[in-house]
Length: 40
Image 1 (cartoon, rainbow, N blue to C red):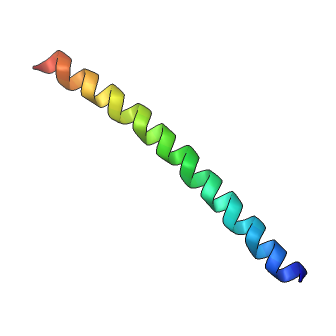
Image 2: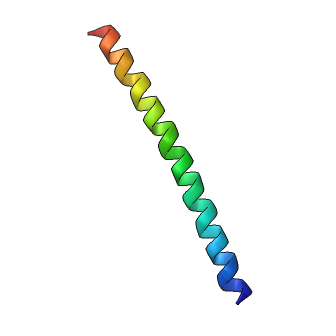
């Protein structure tokens, strides 16, 4: 019981990290696009 709960917690924390990384990636993509716009 507790093992399954721990695995669930680990999965949730991993998903949270992925979501944070995704949002940072989106921000970087926007910054890179604005840089591309400047250099065009």
